[in-house]
Amino acid sequence: MSPVSAKQDNSRLDDYRIVAELARGGMAAVFLGVYEGAARPREIVAIKVVHPHLAYDPDFVAMLSDEARIASSIGHPNVVEIREFVLGRADGRNYIVMEYADGETLSMFLKQASRGKRVGPSLAASIAADVAGGLHAAHELRGPHGEPLDLVHRDVSPQNIIVTYDGRVKLTDFGVAKATGRIQRTQPGEIKGKLAYMAPEQAFGRDVDRRSDVYALGVVLYELAMGRRLFGGKTDADTIRNVMQHNIVAPRSIDPEFPEGLEQIILAMLTKEPGDRFQTAGAVERALRGYLRSVGAGDLTEELGTFVRDLDPDRYRAKQELLRPERALLPPADTTSVSTRTPEFDAPSDDGPTLLSGQLEDAMRQMGLTPSTVPVAPPRPSAAPPRSSTPPPQRPPAPTVPASHLIDQTMQAQFPQALLDQIRASSLPPPPATPIAPAAPPSRTLLWVAIVGGLLLILAGATVVAALLAG
Image 1 (cartoon, rainbow, N blue to C red):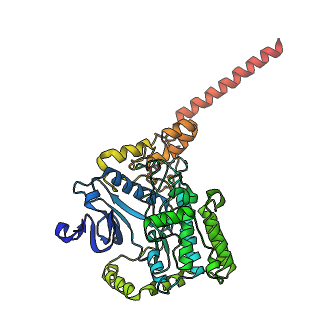
Image 2: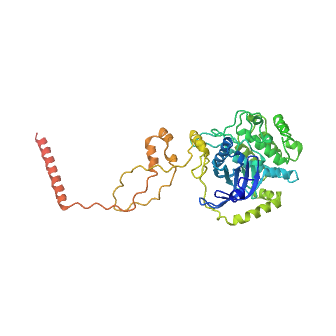
Image 3: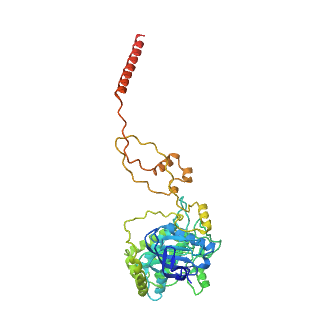
């Protein structure tokens, strides 16, 4: 029985109504759901729910937390966004809520390629270029103080790449990612990832870096463009042997019509030694987009969407019918808002997860992260405004900013006090809106006293000058 069955909770999980099961694996099931809470607009989402037998495994819960924290920090259009993650529940129902990418994984592409529906070199290159862009954003991720996190996905494979029915490409599943400061750490020599897409150094249990993801993407691109497996064998033993032996048949040796420029890019991604490959996923993206320009391929989004819808038309129509009543209840899309979020390795706020017995929260603090957003630091008292006969202009209220973004211990240690005072001043409240009464005019008596006193001072000064001249 699934952990969110109707018998258990009437097909609900907190603020989410479960619509259907999308997929099931050895560690979790993925459900189509609808958010119906009050904190944000109604939304169709995908919910990854951990199987009950793993819900109380601290290592697995930590790995799930890593996936959610890492993916939610990237902020790239080609990476599936994380909406929320809830861990450490008493009933064992741990889950991650993600944006719902309505489409098919590349596994479906390869399955249909064996039946004659090949995606073709240009579309394959376009998909890989988008994935490379998302990977590069993940690889470049930095911590709250600018330190590189050295993130490596380690599981770039067809199962973890989705192409939506409108032609958008999404990379997902950072559950086995490697990053500096991860809560859940891989033991030395432990291998994680799918065998057929591992770089040689990963298969041998050696250290991996971003170039290992470049290699894995090269395997995906090869298989997508050629419509055939590269290293996959009948058994895991056959697959790992093929990976280690690194027997790669050049695409043009199989298909003389295969584009030479794309072949060169693929082979450069698949060199056995990391130092001989493309050194970054960003370089791969540039190379692939350069190839697409050289063959006159422009924006292939619409063509790609058509291809995905035609992979299995019956499946596509059934999914759209399932979603039709849910979409009818969604609010209108907001096309005016622009996200200004930067891809930082932020910890979740208080309205996000319930962490496992506080252990993950403590680990975040040890990593220099703040588990929750705190109120704005209290403003410093300001000097009284100058008197004026006209009311001062109104200013809009200062925006609410996490105090850690204004002044923290690191800033206290590294910046002069004058600069910190300027930062604090930026969050002061606006001046009063009511005008200040002008001062009363001086009385006539005071004016006469001032005039007489002035004359006496002049006479005294003249007497002193005369005495000096006479002497």
